[in-house]
Each structure stands twice: as C-alpha cells, then as structure tokens.
Image 1 (tube, rainbow, N blue to C red):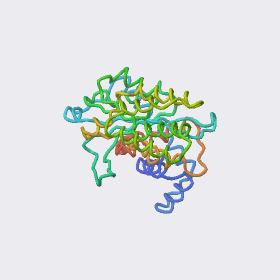
Image 2: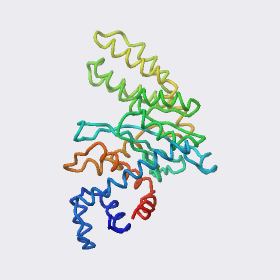
Image 3: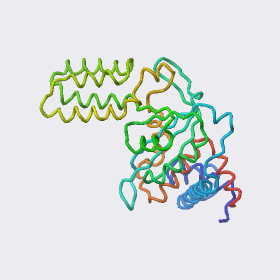
Image 4: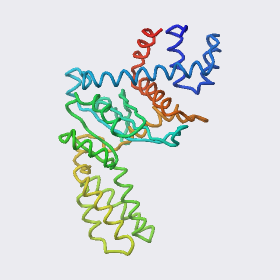
Length: 310
C-alpha cells in the first residue's frame, strides 16, 4: 500500500468517526489527497483487524495484561452489557461491550450527577464464550474488582465462577424495573400501585432487598399475578446478596450500571449506527475495535501499528 503511515492513520481516525463517504469529503477538503471512500474503508478494516489479531496473540502468549502494582491495588468497576447491530449476513447480531474504570476516576458534581474519567473498553461481536476471555485478560491482574450489571445469568455465572470474592451489584434501576412490571399486573388502581412502588423502591435503597421480598410475600394471591410474583421473588432471592443497596451506598459504591449503558451509545452506536450503516460481521468487529481503542485513550497504538506497516 503506497500510502504514508500518517495518511493511513488519518483515514483510520476520521473513518472511525464518520461514514466513509463523509470521511472522504473531509479528508480531501482538508488535505487535497484524493482518497476515496473505499480506500478509507479498507484501511479502517485493515487496522481494526490488526488490533483484533494482536489482542488474541497477547492473550495466548501472556495470559493476562501486566498491570502496575499501584494500579492493581486500586478499586476498579467492571461492567458488561450487549446491544444489537445490523449485519449483512446474519441480520441483527449482538456486540458485547465491557467497561473497566477506577473508582477514583468518578467525580461527583452534584447530589444526583457524577462524571467519569478514563475507561478501558473491550468489544466483541458474538457470544460470551469468546468475549469473556478478552475481559479476563484485562481484569485478571486487578485485586479489587466491583462488578455492576443487570440480572443476566451469563454475567453473574461468569463472575461467580471466576471472581467469587469480588463485590457484586445488580443495577438498582433494573431491580426496581422488575418491581414496576410486577406491580402493573398486580395492582389495578394507579394510585395504590404508585404508592406501593415508591415505598418498596425507597425500602430497597435504605434497607436492602430483604424487606421488599417480605412485602411481596405478604401480598394476597391474585389470579394470574401469582406466577409473576413467584418469578419476581425468584429473581430477587437469586440476587439477594447483590441487592444490599444500603450497604453499598454506605461504602460509597455506585449502584447503577448507567456507565456501561452510556458507553454503548458513545463508544459504539455513535459510529456503528449512523444512518445507512449495514456491516459485514467481520467489518463490524474491526470497526468496533477501532472505536474501543480510540475511546480507551490508546490511539497511540494505532499510530505505532501504522508506522510499522507503512
């Protein structure tokens, strides 16, 4: 490829921000280089694949990422979640995204709002079998892990199997959402329903899930809602130790998974779901890698790879 390393890096940088036709217009209007959208697309996919291949090789050779001792001792939050993207071959497919960040990088700006500094992102198109080893490579060396996620069984099975001594927190808003869904089927009157939800939601925050479980059990059986009630109880009982929100709050821990939900929008959807985007499975993973590298503040790795390849 007779294109300078700087030009290739520029194509990657602009291409992971804009659809390729817009990237063509921007690069050419600023530089007069005369690149076309297909060239930019090929270069972006090429270096996205470089990152993918490098990560797999490092996992095989090193087992887990080397982390400086002082950083390894700091508390780190770990969140994982998935969202769907349209592919040409297989229709809608899920990209699983992991976000890892230090507790010390959370800055409270008001009673209800926080800002989050640097994060490390891990992206994978496909199932948990291939995604979770990528996460393990990044977090294995961290001594104090705090997992926050919704109630998805695959997540908590993984955490229990590999990190049983970690702090585990089910997102409070997901826990309350289940409560609201049950209340819609059980309570016929709107006022009664909303008052009950408010009481239990507050109780969940101030006393943990135990008293809420008791309140649900005390409700008289009501027709079709009996099955819904048992499913809610099973969900809460299976995650009881992850829903002690009063304890987590006393320790100054986060209880919401908004950071990973925001990451899906900012890291992936902002580029991969732009108007008209429909990816091959391979191309989608390659572009997800470029986005993850960029948003992790590791663009220097692309610079180095471009310099070696040019």
